[in-house]
Image (cartoon, helix red, strand yellow):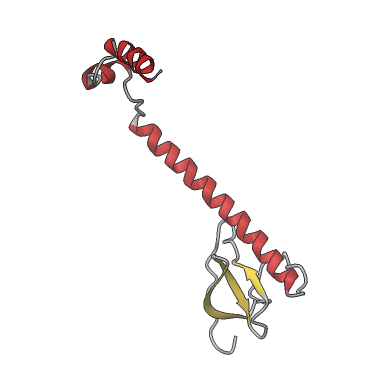
Length: 129
């Protein structure tokens, strides 16, 4: 039985080639190439997408952390010169997301504010005005 199997294998291997010529395999299947401009466009779009996903993920984490701490929903009104938010000046990250820590309650974390469209310079006031 072993002799028959060895004979069949030997006959089958007679017609087999050794190694494939590398030049022949490259010419039949060239690697795909991208134009340099499309690489930059793809990278830019991917970076924008990751930034949006990250911002949404951080916003959700802040809501979940506030709910777990028993804090109310966030006030949607932006801070104003006559109604500022008092915060600790620290760099705090909650699960990798930058947050503001409100003064007086370190568990009260909030999302960093977005700059207003057409941000304007607010001039300093002189003492006594």
